[in-house]
Length: 425
Image 1 (cartoon, rainbow, N blue to C red):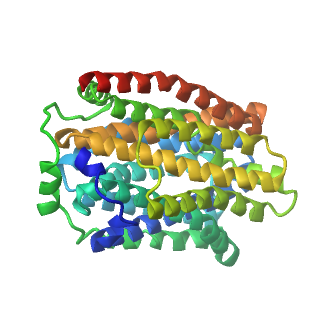
Image 2 (image 1 turned 45 degrees about the horizontal axis):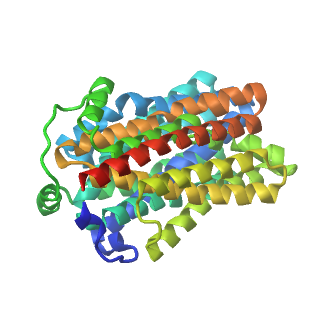
Image 3 (image 1 turned 120 degrees about the vertical axis):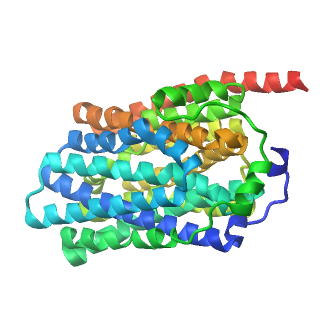
């Protein structure tokens, strides 16, 4: 562990590797397509159904597959070729985009169609996310893992930042149906690069030598995922970061993004499409700015205490956005929220991957993904379905407050971890 964190800082270190540069671009374009699909589909659903409850269900149906199947995905990616699993995910993404286009163009879109497609989109994400995190080990040396993780998160935010702009442009120029047809092609760069992407060999051997061998049964589902937590219970850092990621997903997740059209209408008092784009871009722009600053300056090295503190500040920024009635204040709050979310999210993931023993790596990443992404389904209740009862502003503020209290309750666990470490010395 000391060897992975004691090396001098090199700005954008992971991008020095040609293979990782392709990975970065492929991740950015795939995430761009992902967000273009969300922008178009959310807007079509909002215009056709005007239902906050449906938007909440969109979040639930999208993230439940992560909860149920990330353990399978992580375990399989640890034993099989993760490149092929990611390619299957890209193909499924393309099928979903094409299906949206057919239904929108024909005017036959129904509520149940939207539910099925959003669920399939979630399954595609499960095939993509845990294997992509494992593939990083084949692209960069272990001491540059933190840089690779943060830049990988940055690539996803690049796609998130550009998605609203590209999606809005496609809707305006080509109409929603034709725009989402074009969107299916944006998944191709990642799909094609993976045929020849590096895998195994010296990179995997190097990573294996850097970790002690820890035995344990293979993880294939939710019960086995809990068994993996028992295997790594002595690593309180992994447990704390997994709980932090799970709490953030449980209370807030990305549910407020599905409600952005409603926030835009409430705050804009003008063209909701323009205000919708600006709000979505502010959140992603803050994250992208944060990644660039932190990666170039080597700031905020991964520490569990820092991750908890940044998560609590994220709660404050989201609550400010939820309660703001001034459009510029709302934009500023979202920009800060994006910066803070990127900071604590990448830090938590880096700490987990840096502390994960090699034999348990795929399983631990699967559990972390189940927590950080799978529990987002409940945010569809805390923000979405509750928003249909008390309003989306109040529901988001309450969700942020609940997360703030939960993170505060994790602080004693951090203190206990430090005490045990000191006693060990």
